[in-house]
Image (cartoon, rainbow, N blue to C red):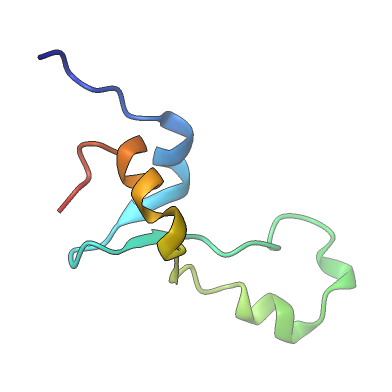
Length: 68
């Protein structure tokens, strides 16, 4: 059986934790930061957001060698 290709876009956006959860970075931290409140920016600083359970099966298919 041939090797499966990892989707490179998904590889850059998602990371697998040791317990098997899929971690993603929070949004709204790239540009237009002057219009956002301190609370919005501080809340988006922490990259420990997790992917939705509805998307998890699709992401696991895109990252075949990251499954724990």
